[in-house]
Amino acid sequence: MEIAIVGGGPAGLSAGIVAARLGAQVTVIDDNSRLGGQLIKQTHKFFGSRTHYCGTRGVDIAAILEQELRKTGAEIVLNTTVIGHFQPNILGLASSQQFTKLTYDRLIIATGAYENNVLFENNDLPGVYGAGAVQTLMNVYGIRPGRRVLMVGSGNIGLIVSYQLLQADVEVAAVVEALPYIGGYHVHAAKLRRCGVPILTSHTIKAALGKEYVTGAVICRVNRKFRPIKGSEKRLKVDTICLAVGLSPLIELLSQIDCYLVYIPELGGLVAWHDENLQTSVPGVYVAGDVSGIEEASTAILEGRIAGAHAFLSLKGRDANPEAEAIIHDARQELAVIRQGPFGEKAARGKKQLQQYSPARPVIPQ
Amino acid sequence: MSRKTSEPKETRITNHPILTFNRGKKVTFYFEGKPMQGYLGETIAAALVANGIKVFRYTEKHKRARGFFCAVGKCSSCLMVVDGVPNTMVCMEPLREGIRVERQHGRGKL
Ligand SMILES: Cc1cc2nc3c(=O)[nH]c(=O)nc-3n(C[C@H](O)[C@H](O)[C@H](O)COP(=O)(O)OP(=O)(O)OC[C@H]3O[C@@H](n4cnc5c(N)ncnc54)[C@H](O)[C@@H]3O)c2cc1C
Ligand code: FES
Image 1 (tube, rainbow over the protein chains, first blue to last red):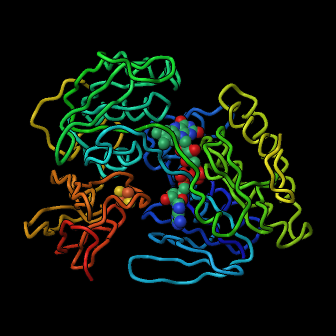
Image 2 (image 1 turned 180 degrees about the vertical axis):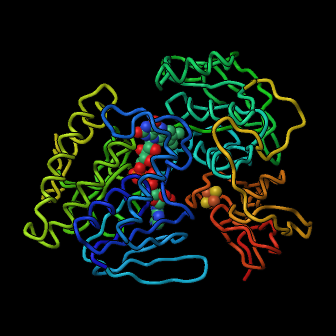
Image 3 (image 1 turned 60 degrees about the horizontal axis):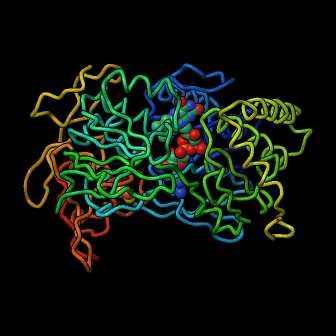
């Protein structure tokens, strides 16, 4: 295969669309039964500064991108996990029935991110779910995760998933947030408050109650140093505890390929160093989307375009299709605009920090 | 939409303000020998949660109960014995007619 793309979220899909349209042979591999990544669980209308899809529901954006990719005739492999990388350029693919190999010329890793856990007593009890798992149950399969939920984290994910729980007719006992302020957008917080859901800032979860599964939770107030304040504990009767405490890039494959990894908190933790074209320290291996730093769907789409176009360019040369350079140029400009906005600022800082590192001299910059 | 819930409640959502669910064919599967219903197109984990099953396995050393956690095949919390095969990641494994699903105790034997 000329260009192999791991992950069929917005980043992988748009990389595939661009590269296939330019004229490359493309395969997109995803471990789910449907394309779209995180987007298939998003029922709300998307924010996004300058994206074409702003105001469209995530699940509908996924459908649009999927249709565009299918039109190009690119090969799509579903229900298949890329479980390993072998030298020099072979991927190991596993589905429930078989293991196969795929050789590539260019590789784009768009695996997205996984959810963080947080430390508290009994955090391993059944009924403690990641926000993504709750969304999968509710929005993909139409199954309520429980009847009464405690949400941990008031970033956009925590707020949006709380609202989605209400839409599925599940009670939300409270949203707790350790910071002294709400992390997500105020429109989302306001919607929840209108429905009577308390959002408790400077609060955290102390313990999950229950023997075999969650039957309650203990929450408490925290001081400025995030230490629990004695005597402020409160018991809530809930059957589900939903964790929305951030995401970390899914870098296992990149680490196997020996890409130079750098720790940047603004990007969500360890990420593969990459240049302006999204190429990592290993020539011919690209990243795009949340795996290159936690951001949003619009930036994932733009990064995908750049990676797709550059993979094509580096493989076939600029004469093969002069459009490739224009695509990269336009997408870079759009990215710069988004990252100048108030919500892109953190990622912009992270990406800038990344450039202070150099794979040629892998040391910590001052 | 109301915040107050009217108990007891169905685990399956039938009325949703935005989504409609196109469930596949209804099938029977067995959990610890007991027949249960689910739909083609969903994962084994989803079908179990819909049937009120929260405990999927017990850990080797401390015998702690484990259930569903990430739903995306990343945390290994959901390993069960499916048709005799241990360590099956049920959050990714599609439900099939007639399969036998069992809780896994410890590491599972081949
Ligand atoms: C609740 C919530 C609300 C959000 N709201 C917004 C919003 O309003 N606006 C906005 O712009 N963004 C929003 N986002 C963020 C947006 O969804 C993500 O930034 C975006 O989906 C990232 O795209 P991606 O393609 O990088 O990764 P993903 O969408 O995560 O896709 C990665 C895909 O790769 C697959 N994969 C991973 N590893 C492998 C492997 N080894 N083999 C095969 N497949 C693999 C995954 O299963 C997945 O399908 C929201 C996110 C959440 C969770
Ligand atoms: S629930 Fe995490 S791997 Fe299945």
